[in-house]
Length: 256
Image (tube, rainbow, N blue to C red):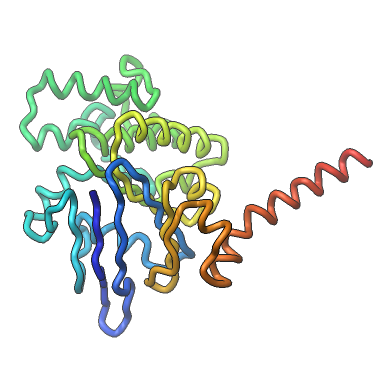
């Protein structure tokens, strides 16, 4: 459904993304994982041409994205921004209906779609439809952001650390909601995160990046069991070390 071939982005002499190639099959969530500055977000933005590649290509459903006007491409690709990015001068209804309005949907179809999506992300349309973004909690804003990305019934979603700024409990709730929604709708997604546990929970496959390059791609289990190098081994050893620490803490509590 999404295919990257030797995708590259240069800024002068600096190579931000270096000949990156991978695929996301239909209905699959592929997580881009790596430390800050490794090129995850740059890669994501090249998929829908918010950033133009220096070299290489992206195909979505077999179509080279360079053959489409950028604004038309982005209307058919759901995008969830880091930090939500809701328009503060628009109500929840208006935020969600932006893309369907641009696509010329009827007012009745838009109204039904907005209410349907608010239900999908577990928000009450009657209560929240006409509220402003600053009247919502962080978790509610992020749910509206997900609903907005799904508004035009896209086949593809791109998510840029969408839950990173939320408290742990809200983040876990939204991760569970996203896992349910993407299974229910069958969307294909590329999900950027630097949180390993989030990657393990949400990703069908994980692309590990370092310094703009692909280090390893595989299922969560494959990366845990067969890391390709020390970098991946140390990265995926983190949850094991944390689990051991938790067990030690619990064990010491039992003996105190």
